[in-house]
Length: 147
Image (cartoon, rainbow, N blue to C red):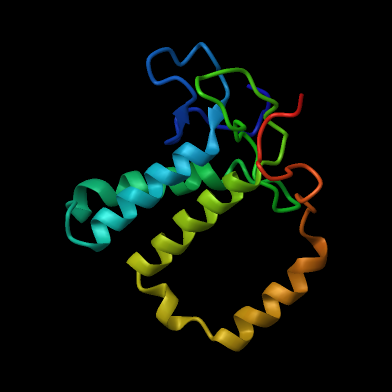
């Protein structure tokens, strides 16, 4: 593993579900989207909370382990039509979006969103903006691998 802090026993998917050894790094955006879908299924009553919520919690724990101290999401494969090696430290914007979607759905599911003060949330977001990594230079539209 490229990151010594990463725990493979957590709930992350590999780039290739058929052959996890093909690309040994975990893949964060896919894991986040699965976590989002499971949380949504629990919230909508489609999935049994007792069975699936522990999976959501393990998924979120794994996802959190891929976010570095600056808030950048690591282990995101760029756009590709098939599993292929990628730089686990590269920042791909859609990976951040998938992580935010999963986190937001978890908050909705546990009803924590109702307890958030919008003014405090905005102040915190404005405080964090200057320290957020600038991803605009990395990916130009259409977003894809650099040639």
